[in-house]
Amino acid sequence: RVCVRVCACVCVFASKELHMVGANTALIDISLRHLVPYAARIRSVVVVIEPRKYQLVEYLEKWRTVLPIHFCFFDERHYEWAGSILSAEPLFGESNLVLLPDSFLKASEGNAVVPTMLDLLSRFGVVFGYVAETSHERLQ
Image 1 (tube, one colour):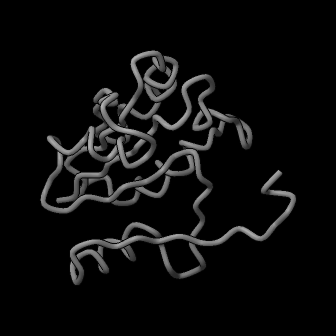
Image 2 (cartoon, one colour):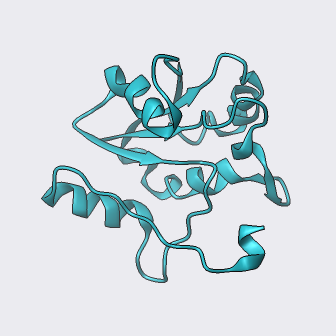
């Protein structure tokens, strides 16, 4: 089973992960939707939050019956997204998938994000995936 880490503590003053990108859809929803088809295989989804970001906990309540969401606090001895991962380290499982919920992640047709990353993770110790954004409209 997979333990998924959703690192959601990038910005102190505004919650980028709660930026609305569609009807009733925030950026973090897009990350979590990738996990839904694999919910039965997921032991926990750990969301790392900053102490002052309780609006994120409140927002994610809608996911509590869909995914096994747990929260931990960002350890302020660390920095940025890498610090989010280190903050969740005590909760790591055998396999861990990190999603950054202030990013828009969309897989190409026939290549779902979760199974692709888990397949790679089964063959390599650490796997990073990214897609460079070239759309000036999206980057604005």
